[in-house]
Length: 458
Ligand SMILES: *Cc1c(COP(=O)(O)O)cnc(C)c1O
Image (cartoon, rainbow, N blue to C red; front, side, top):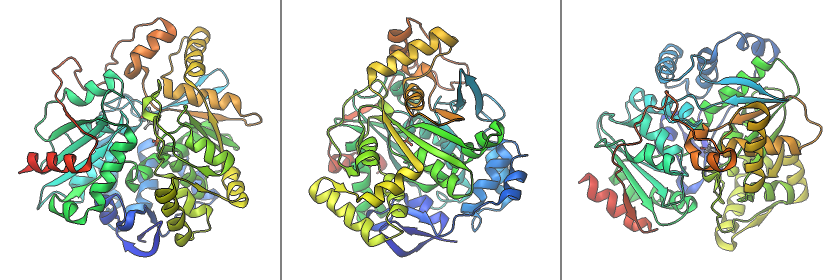
């Protein structure tokens, strides 16, 4: 098995290559040439495994040329040893909704689940053995802290984290900026998350710069992240023991929900994947109307979803256009030249077979947080609350699992406003957020970011 690009099927890369590169040459995203499809009997066997065993079986299919199953097993053991519960995730009932809590890791968001594995993969694949690797990552608030927790103090690795200045919650920022390790650099960019992501892509596409600094990336465009997230879709299905399962997923960059789409391709009988967005609803618009048109980003109370350029959508597009890399390239060209593209009716219908999409605005999100607390004495974070809102809006689906993407403590101010409650830091938060913060503020410019990095590593 190898990997190709959504914009050029003739390219061939190994897992190690795509792990290191993140983005394909020419700007496309990597996809695997084969996706294992489990039959009924295999699914039945998988259903008996615990979370870590299941993770080993699923992830192995995407990296078996480079990692043996035993090595992967111990790598996964190690990755999840610091989680609050042994089963990594936790499924519970809130009324008629099944909530999958994904925030038991060291930085309280689902990003830890993939990032901890990725941190250990850097070591295992010996990527930083001979030459220092410089990882550059854009964050809408949670990826950065998860990456820092996973890569902090690793030998021969520097991590540069770009976050949009003043556009993430203060707890989100503090988890990143109080760490104080010498291999971690926090950069507050005067712009939005989309600007940060654009800068990272520009750096990747600058071959000279990329090879000069031996650059790598851990954004959700890195396929390894998606792979780790497939696991909990299977896990939910096996624990819920219901066919006809659907998932409601708070969505920004389309990475987490895309893992569900791959799970379905792997034979998991998922009915619908529900995209829940805040007012930055480009995905809601493209799924319901076919028009993919980024607008200006609005700041919301669910900042990790304040995204208008949902990069991983290109990976869905590839399958929707019948695996036609030329058409993907054409649409992406249109997007960069005209600022939008439009899918035809048959393409929209194809998407609608697997997806629903709902926008939930801040006011409704706050009401949901308040109501769920009043009725069930349970506090949802604002992202997860949009998933609840979307689940309630779509009629006719049973057995909905909402992905709980972050712990509410990260958004204490919003919780206080919605419920009047003051939240305390949960004990599994591994960072002391009261320490002194360290970050640099930089203009929204890729050349300034390049200079910053070159200065720091010389
Ligand atoms: C990253 C994030 C999301 C969005 O996930 P995508 O993979 O970007 O769609 C939703 N909620 C929280 C809390 C996040 O950190």
